[in-house]
Amino acid sequence: MKTVFSLEPIRKISSELRKNGRTIGFIPTMGALHQGHLKLVKESKNKNDVTIVSIFVNPAQFSPTEDLDKYPRPFEQDKKLLEQGKVDYLFFPNAKIMYPNDFQTYVTSNKLGNILEGKSRPGHFSGMATVVLKLFNLVQPTNAYFGQKDFQQSVVVKHMVSDLNLPINVNVVPTVRDKEGLALSSRNIFLSSQERLQALSLYQSLLLGKKLISEENKNVQMIKTAIKNYLQEYKLICLDYIEICNPKNLSPVKIATNKSVILIAAYAGKTRLIDNIII
Image 1 (cartoon, rainbow, N blue to C red):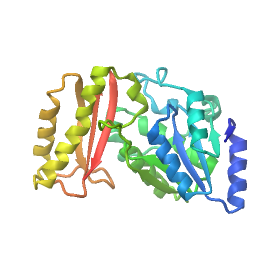
Image 2 (tube, rainbow, N blue to C red):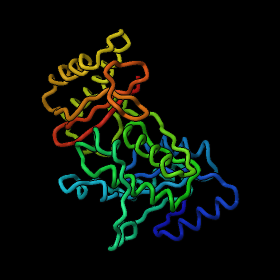
Image 3 (tube, rainbow, N blue to C red):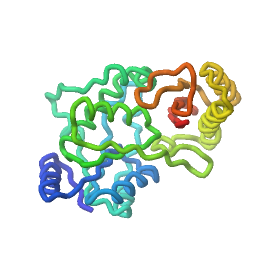
């Protein structure tokens, strides 16, 4: 695996690969890698000639009240995992390279970027979409890979790719969970043992919602109330939102169907977690 730190070298590498007819799989990450990321790597390696992973903790998608400074950055450990996964190139730029002093252009996702996570984290999706577009322009991948856990992110990226006519296939890979059902996340390391135990209730609440829908309980308000009542038993869990939406455009539905997605966000102690389940 070759590590690239600057813009022009990664652009040149990608250009040469494409000129030679090689397909490029790309996984943009913020590091603190886990088995969920490695599943994306595996998917990419199965379907592309070359796999490129980026690690960049993007300051533009953190608000002033969020955990940018505390976000884990175990670079050497991440590098070893990627080497074990037989990644071809690691792109590891710094903030000064990605956002020079006169930087002033941002991508805005008007509707999708202001609901759910966007409502709770103003500016988050503008920062995310901007850096993903920059990375896409540098790497020029054939295929890009995102995890289902960040469901809204994948929908925003798909719309950006479609709206801006980018020749990239966006692939969404199912969420990887630990043996107890907790969705793998780089922020899980912040959970205490008790918080982690109670965080399992998030996935269980999603399964409850799915069960109710499978039993022909289609009324969204009733399902959301049942989930909220279930979570009230867990004192370390503070619910931000629970929504049932159309998975293509995240518009709320009034009647749940087997084509809906349930999305949840909550705090376990001080750690913010998100999860979802596709019905």
